[in-house]
Image 1 (cartoon, rainbow, N blue to C red):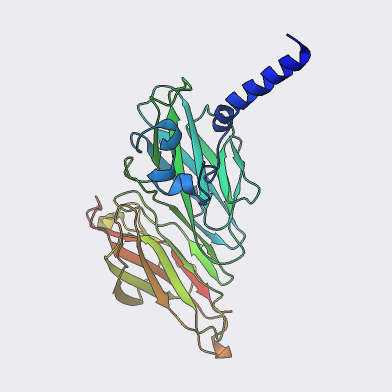
Image 2 (image 1 turned 60 degrees about the vertical axis):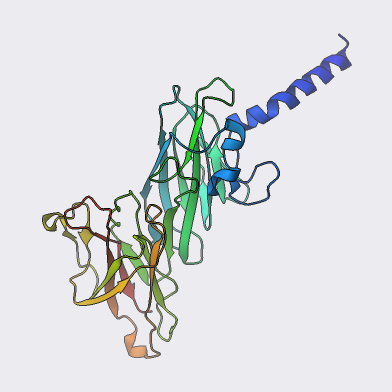
Length: 322
């Protein structure tokens, strides 16, 4: 074969193999043929892993462990995604994107140029640890994740994929919820999980400064359409009370219940913890309020809880007026 013929043959072989090689070294959520939707792989089954690995989601349990769900603006969190299934082999892949903030690659992952998407760098893993850096703007961030477990034969059949969440067969993803807090708002502790393993987040939407009449507290990831109790206490550094003796192991009360306000969470899907609550707490333009501090926490009744006392609580939030 002449040198030019050899060159053409190698080029043709590369073109044939390159899609396969690209998947083995990861694919970002929006790298999907005939779609421009950001997060297409991670949002719903119509544009996800099944396009190449056949079938609907199912068979893979995708869980997450997060250190630092509620952090200051510009702060960092550590996230570990773990998958398990009956698919023989240890190969698998991940694709995830974030609605805010940027990813920090771990030893088995890589990040796109804008930092809002992450994927694997090799297919010989079923657990991935990476970082997330909070944005400069306070508020909620959601991470959407799809995971594929493959049997290693490089064929489309015999593989399984699922989205992050309680139901491996769900056709939409349950997001991992994080929150970036402004100056003046500091999270204490973590929330306790609901009956589906979801964690809530509580934060401040803007700096709690004198004259900020638009200041509000936001809680996301709660049981939907559920009775809610907002608990406030004057001061900070209140410690914590383990609610195990009350029948709620794993939950910690962060206030002394000086003020209690009853309300209800928004409607939504319980498995995806779509309940939320917004509490407007406008701050008057009174300089004497500067330095005043209080601690707040929210609790909601979880109809799907396995605890004897089905009240789950958010992280605590210490607010100091600036």
